[in-house]
Length: 280
Image: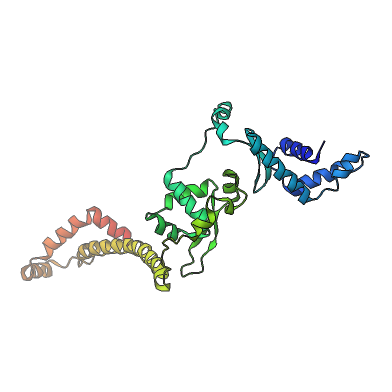
């Protein structure tokens, strides 16, 4: 067999894509502890010769119109079905439903792929809409990852594509994207970098809002308790009964204590009074 045929057999038989160095390692292992001259000769082959043979195979498949191709992805060389035969090949796997992305998700993914690493604010500046939900979908599907933080006030997160993104679209690197160089040169709108005050303002506002909500509840409770206490206080501080003579004199001078005591007694039976007693 020729070297090209041996390499083709290795790529075909492998359950996963093969890196060039893995092919070289397989050739060297086959030449160990053997007297086969052909195997010994191929054991001395380097990565450059292997790459040359792979490129020849790739050209042959294209020229002969094979329904499959040999291609290099980020994780190695592999055989893939030609896209034109997808309609028929898909019939063999009816249960495998392709996961489709929505239009907004594809737009957002394209911006990240061509402009990575990029902040969410810059993505929204290009699309003109919020991308919170779309970003969550891309992160969950493993197409996008957090690549760090930008060196601007507020330190917003930076996003970039993942290795799975390259595998999914059959790319070796992001430079293999269509018109990668041209699209990267086109100026796109970007979000103005926030000042230190703007970066700190949302945090302070958020703390103030959460703090005020927590502070308002005790204040409202204490206010209700105070009001109830003020209404009940006359009953609590009502003077002890005096002798008959003194009580009659007091009743003549100020006839209001009796009604106030009755009102206080009524109030003490209300739920508000119960709340004030528990608050006390």
